[in-house]
Length: 195
Image 1: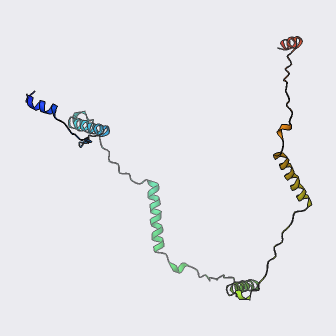
Image 2 (image 1 turned 180 degrees about the horizontal axis):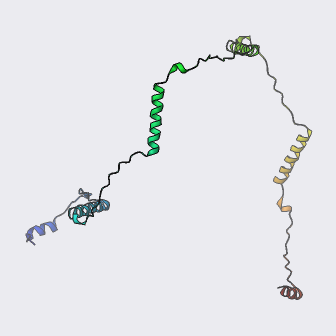
C-alpha cells in the first residue's frame, strides 16, 4: 500500500462536501446463463472434435443401390408404349359413318306463355308510376279488454294493495313447542331382537 500525504487526508475529512446523488449504470453487459452454457458446450464440442481419434471408427462397406424395375413395371411400360404407337398409327378409314342428331327440346306453348307473363310482370314492376296510387287513410282499431280481463286486473290490484297495506301489528304472538317422543322399553327390546 502506498503512503498518502497526511495533510491530504486531513483536508478530505474536514472539507464541507456538497455532493449530489448520482444514479450509477453498468455499461458492461454480462452474458446470460443460457449464453454462457451454450458457449461452454460449443467449446467442448470443438475440443472433442480436435482430439477425436480416427482409429476409433469402424470400417463400413458402402452398398450402392440402383433399383431396377421389376417384371410387372416393365410389362406395364411396354403396354403403354404399344398403346401410344397404336394410337399414332391408327387408320381412320376403318371407322364407320355415324349421323349425329342434335337433341334440343324446345319449350311448349304453356312454358312460353308463362315466361311471357313473367317478363311482362317484371317490366310492369320496373315501369310502375307512383303517381297512379290513390291516397288511403288507415284506421287504427283499439281493442278494449272484455269484462273478465277487467275483473281479473281489479282483483290483482286489490290483492297487491292489501299486501302492501297489511298491518303486522295485528298479528298475535304464538309459541311453538316441539315434542319429541322417546321410544319405550318395549320398543327398544323389540328393536334389539330384530337385529
